[in-house]
Length: 117
Length: 118
Image (cartoon, rainbow over all chains, first blue to last red; front, side):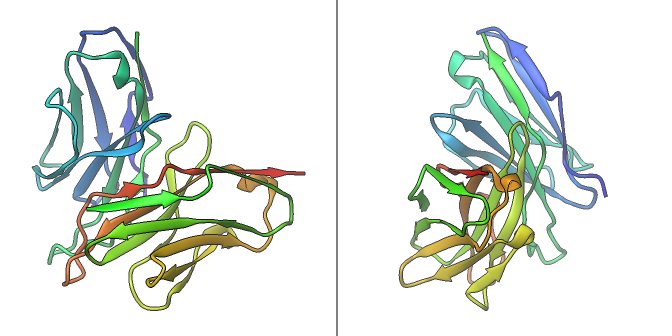
């Protein structure tokens, strides 16, 4: 099975611009979570999607948004970029069974490294 | 809400020596516990997890961890490290409901950089 894929792997933007990152989960996985990783703040949870619905959200401003499509692929968007948004953005997928029981393992992609100049 | 504290930001060790990476957590609900490893310019790879049952869990690459509920700890150990174990290690916790279904949000510690010297 192919792992979690994220595109693009690297991105350079300037302040004020917006950016969209993409994540394709492992085949059969219906839950996708996003995390931001920075040297200062470490790994922080952004949001989680399941069945095209956001079911959990971290403490980030409204400039950070996401969505999930019917094929479970997910995108996250950051508008009006700030220098502090420079980070590695990680996507993780997990399997959710028919009774909504999770295998509890999140499989991570390689990340998208965003640099804001 | 949960929080995780990794007690050492950096751990240097010589090859073939044992190592312990310490992790303490805080939570008002039952939790699941995880250790992930991150190699440079890569994502996170799961080493092992504790969901329930035996408090000693074994993972990949010879790592193991012990869940201690009274001390709210989940320390990671390896009896003999290799140069290839040099990486950053993250302890993480997720809340679990009474039915065993967990929620998506992982709370991570700040990470421990393990450096194995020849």
